[in-house]
Every structure is written in C-alpha cells, then in structure tokens.
Length: 373
Image 1 (tube, rainbow, N blue to C red):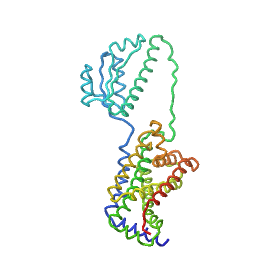
Image 2 (cartoon, one colour; image 1 turned 90 degrees about the vertical axis):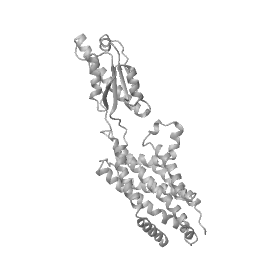
Image 3 (cartoon, rainbow, N blue to C red; image 1 turned 30 degrees about the vertical axis):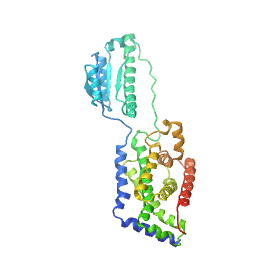
C-alpha cells in the first residue's frame, strides 16, 4: 500500500510540475464544452430561399408570405425563369427554390390537384431532409387553412371541424438541442482527456528510459499500474464535476436524477478508458504512435455513439457493433439520469455491460504489460 501511495504522489507531482499540461487538462476541455455546446446544433436556420411565381395572384403571394414569416428561411431571391434559379443554386447563392405554377389560384378554386415545385440543394443530405420537413409543414398548414376558407366562401356554411394534434414533449419541453448536446459533449471530453493522458503517460516513461528502471525494481505489476492510472481517474472525475457545474450554470441543463448514481457509473466507465489507454501504451513506443492509435478508436466510438447520428438509423451490422462501444453507454446514462431522472435499476443493463467491459479491458491491459521480474 505504501508503494502505491508513493507512485500516486509521484505522478501527481509530475502532472502539476508540467505547466504546459495543466491548461490542456483543465482549461481547454472546458472551453471546448462551452464552444461546442453552442455550435453543435441540429437546427438549420438562415436557409437561403428563392421562388419563381408564375401566377402572381393574391393566393401565391400569401404562400410566399408564409415563408417570409418563418424564422428558418431567408427569402431573398426572386427568379423570373428556372434557368436563373438553377444557376443561382449551382453558384451556392440559394438553398431552396419554390416554383408556383400558372393558374395556381384558379385551379385551387376549381378544386384541382396542384403540383408545387420544390428544388433543394442536397449536397448535405441531412440538412436537405430537415429543410424538406420545414417546407412540407409550411405548405401543409397553408393548404389546410386555405381549404377552410374556400369551403366557407363557396358553400356559405359553418367552418368544418378541424382535428388538431397537440404534441407533448417529455424530458425536453422546449426542444432545446443544448439539453441533449451538453451531456454528450461532456462525455466526449472526459473520454478523450483520460484516454490520451493515460496512454501517453506510460509511453513517455518509455521514451525517457525511466520505465526500464522501474521494471527492474521489486515493485509488483498491479502496484505500478494502480499508481500510474489512479491520478488520471481522479482527473476524469474532476472534469466531470467541473463540466456538470458549467452545464447547470451556463446552459441550465436539468439534473433530475441522482448525482451519486452518475458519479458511481462514471467511476466504472473511466476504468474502461484507463484500461484502454494502458493497453494501447503496451504496444506503442512513442507518444505519437499512442496518440494516433487512440484517436483512431475515439473517432469511431464518437461517430457511432448515437450523439450525432441516431443509432436506430444505422444499418443492422452497425447497430450490432455499437454494443461494443463504451461511449454509447455513457451518453445513454448521462441523458437518462440527468434528463429523465432514471434510477439504479433503469441503468442496470448498461451498468452491467460497462462493468464487464472494464474487467475485460483491464485484464487484457495487465496481461499485455511486460515487466522484468
């Protein structure tokens, strides 16, 4: 026990002695949390909108006014001919072009089917899909209101009964994307900092030659590993604490569940990441190699965690691979505990999988670590 405490004390002194590492550990991640949480959004605003009005009637102008009133569209382009609109979209000056056909108002009065032309720049497929939803909702609302007006004017009857659906959004009533993104980005920062630091720390000992000196001492393998990795476990828990404080003070993210449960799960999750960092360091000789290998796995884990792309929309084989993604479980737990107020039994499946992951990962790391006895 005294040996472990000595190694831990030595590691903390080494970390805080390096003045260049302290900003990387504590300041840069917090700046990233603040910046990324404001920048990473699923909302699409300021959509450059153009239109071709071949009807020039009161009804066609009313439809265009609906897009003017929307906060998502910037109606700034009017085209007399499709050639001009195609050229503008080719040059990137417009994202959406609405084409209103001739006799638009007359055919509406005659109860005919009318086709509106909508051209969307779909280089970014995800953005194009969201823009299409916005446009469809505006046209659908306009059409419903117009049908009521036409029935009243033509038949002079009472307004027909309309069935209106009122959605009830649970866990994020205002649909604020930061409520979902802040916990997820905090997960990424805790993961990357602990993985990179733990992986490069032991490799740095190799480069300096001090690891060979430690290996020939009578220190047992598990004493050395615990002493080397425990400081980064503490740093990971500290980053989580500071991140939660910023999430509450700056972004007003609700915290409905138990903080003790969140810390309990995080303490196990960080063991997974530390074991992964040790495993990587056992097969690398330089800090650059450790960084590249760690970054390779982190990018895959992040993109398949469900934070930026819903797991349900992935192919079946990709959904199966996400079962081996520890970041996925951490993102789920953070959202469940913070936003839904989930308890211990609610997160038990993810907790069991993460615990097994930690045992297997650390066992592999210890087994692959070579020490001269």
